[in-house]
Amino acid sequence: MRRRRQRPIPPVSEQSSDAELLHAIAAGETSALRLLHHRHAGWLRARLRRRCADPDVVDAAIQDTFVAVWKDSDRYVETSADAAAWLWTIAVRRLLSTLRGPAHRWLSGPADELPDVATTPSAEELVLLGVEHGALGPALDRLSPELRRLIEATALDGLSVREAAKLLGIAEGTAKTRLMRARTRLRELLT
Amino acid sequence: MTTDWHLDPGLLEQYETGVLGPSRIMAVEAHLLACAGCRALIPADDAWLADSWSAVYDDIHAPRVGSIQRLLTRAGLPEHRFRLLTATPTLRWSWVLATAAVLMLAVAAARVGADSSVPIAQAFLVLAPILPVIAVSGAYGPPADPMHEITGTTPAAGPALVLWRAVSVIGVAVLMATVAAVLLPGPGWYAAAWLLPALLLCTGTLALATVLSLPVAAGILGGLWITGVLAAASDERAVASMFGPTAQLAYLVSAVLAAAVLILRRRRFDLGENR
Ligand SMILES: [Zn+2]
Image (cartoon, rainbow over all chains, first blue to last red; front, side, top):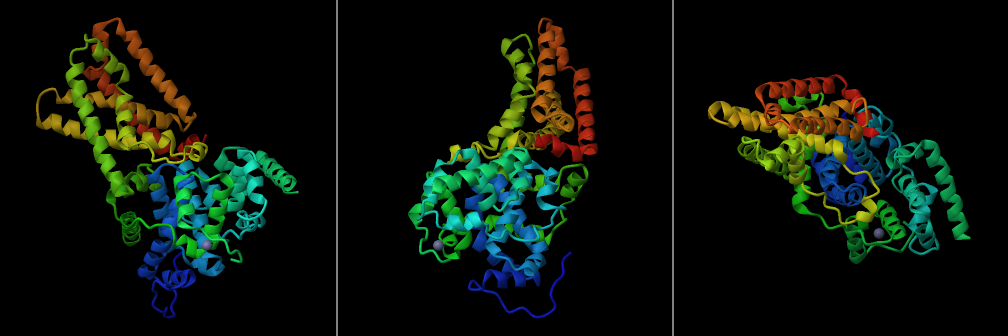
C-alpha cells in the first residue's frame, strides 16, 4: 500500500539522482516521476523494442512501468538497489505479462506488486561489460542461438531460470540443462 | 563502471536499427544498464515522450476514472488489455481507422451480397467472418520490425491480441450499423447483420480458447463456417438463408453466449492464450 513519507523532501531537478527522485516520488511528487520518466523511458523503449516488435505493446509496458513505480515506489526505497536495473526488471516483466497474459502470476507475484529485490548484476553480466575487449564476444557469437538467448534472458534481462523458460516457451528443466550447457560451452570457448 | 569503453552515437544507431552481432548487442545492453551517461545518449523522441508521459499522468491522477473501463473490466476485459487497446493516440487512430474500414466493408458486402447468385457474393460469404478481422489487423498496421532475425524468435503480440482488437472494433461497428439502420430505413440492417458472423468468430474463438489452444479453437470455428457454406453452396436459397433473419439472430445469440463464457471463464482465458 502507498505510504507517503512525512519528513520534507528537498526539491528535485534535472540534476537529482535517481535515488533522490524515487524518494520524492515516494513522497508524492509528480514532478519527480516526470523527471524519472523522461530520463529512463527512452532507453527502456529502445531495449524493449528488441524484445517485442509491436510498438503498442512496448508503449503500454513502459506506461505500466511508471504507473507501477508511482504506486509502489516505497519498495525501491527499501531495497535501494540500482534504479536503472530495477526499472528494467519491472519493464521487462510488464512486457512479458502483456505478451503472455496474467497467467504470468509467476512473473510479478500478485498484480501490481513490484519485484522485491532488483537484479543484482550476475557474474555473467559483469563479464559482459568487458565483452567488447575480451575473448567473450567471439565466444558468445559462436554459441548456438538457443543457448545464447538463455544467457541473454538470465544474465542480461535479470529473469529467473523459470521466467526465462516461460519467455522462450521451453520447460523449466530444459532451461536449466541448457543454461548449464551454455556455461560449460562458454568456458570451453574461453580457454 | 571501471571500463573506459563507452557507446558512441554510431554504435547506438547500429543497435537501434538491429544490425549488430549478438555479442555486441549484449555488450551494448549490459553497458546501458551500468552507465547513465550512455543511456542519456539515446536520442529522445520528444513527441513520443510527451505522449507516454501524459498517459502515465492521466493514469495516476485518475486511476479508476473511466466508467467504460470499469464496465469492461467487470465484463472480463483485463485491465492491461484495456490499456493496450487505448494506450496511445496512434492506437486510437488505428481504432478509428479499423472501425471505418470494417463499416465500409459491411456496406460493400451489403451491396454485393444482396444478390447471392453472383460468384463474388459467394466468395464474400465464405470470407464473411474473416474479412473484418483482416481489416482490423491491417488497420493496426504491420508491426514496425527493423530486426526480423531477432524479433522473429521472441514472442510477439500474437493472434489473441488481434482478436481482442477485432472484438473491440467489430462490436462497435455492429452497434453503429444498427443505429444507422434504425435511423435510415433500407438495407442498413443487412450491413449490421453481415458483421455478426465475424463478431461470433472472434468472441467464439476467444471463448473456446479457454478450453483449447487458440489455433485449434480458431480452426474448429473457421472449419464449421466453411463446412456450412460449402454444404449450402449447392442451394441458392440455403446460401441466402445463412444471412437471413433467423440465422442472424442465431449468430447474435451465439456471440452473446460466447461473450458470457468468456466472462465466466476469463481466468482460464489467459491459460489458453499461453499455450
Ligand atoms: Zn558509457
